[in-house]
Amino acid sequence: MDETVAEFIKRTILKIPMNELTTILKAWDFLSENQLQTVNFRQRKESVVQHLIHLCEEKRASLNDAALLDIIYTQFHQHQKVWDVFQMTKGPGEDVDLFDMKQFKNSFKKILQRALKNVTVSFRETEENAVWIRIAWGTQYTKPNQYKPTYVVYYSQTPYAFKSSSTLRRNTPLLGQALTVASKHHQIVKMDLRSRYLDSLKAIVFKQYNQTFETHNSTTPLQERSLGLDINMDSRIIHENIVEKERVQRITQETFGDYPQPQLEFAQYKLETKFKSDLNGSILAEREEPLRCLIKFSSPHLLEALKSLAPAALFSRIQKLLCYSASHSQGTQDLSSYVPLYTRC
Image (tube, rainbow, N blue to C red; front, side, top):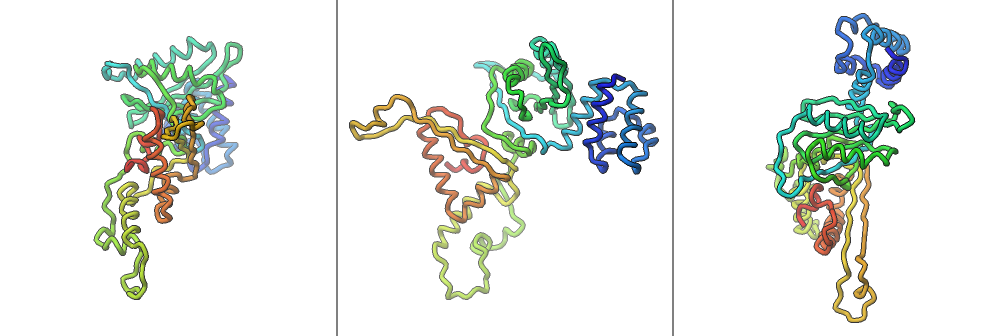
């Protein structure tokens, strides 16, 4: 086994918490069950690592074997990466082709290797018809850096791919080309969604969040459930705007439901529109260049944060503002297609 491969495996194993080590090694499926039984996982981690490296040397682990171990570790710790979403489209009149995973892998790898002399590409398929891709980038003069790879998760026969954020932005166009050609699409664009929670991004773009809900206390009258009223409360207390509060609660529940929202950390709304005015001589009315606006949303749990604005009546104000803007925009991308907040515009 090459020294660089041994060092790569060593660094990867050192990153794995001891309580996860056995699980990840079994998922790797490189070392046999009998070999793993010879390892004393109760001793110091340095000793465990040395024993595991010795076993890998006996089996002559390759660079691809080491890369697969790194992919599995990343799958267990997806939240350590920041993920971007890319959407692909077919050309006019193009039909949906049958997906061939082997053909996809070969095509994707060839495109990158033709463009770059030094690049390593590894794949790992999952049970959800997804393939995890690990790309270690090099240049024409330097070997691939195995410690700063890019990860891509592509779901077969869908137009969506998820990419880990990387400082090597110059390789993004090439990566997009490889994805587009290998998956037999025509064009690829980056969506204005970003999060550390890959499953939440997947739930949003695949519209897997549940917006039709039955609550565990659905037999409770709406007035008691939505406003938190005590049925034994003094009847002399007057609740102002109770009808409006019920309406806000009902709309919020219909839009977001009672279940936890997908965990989204970043989203942005782009607006491009021309100023409209009936006043003659207006400076803005004579402006030919369209007005451009970018609204960014950021929160540790963005959708839950937006949902919590409803009781303060801020939810409807933001909704009306963005819906009004959307009605005047000229084809720019907005959030309405994948964030439940805007489904009632």
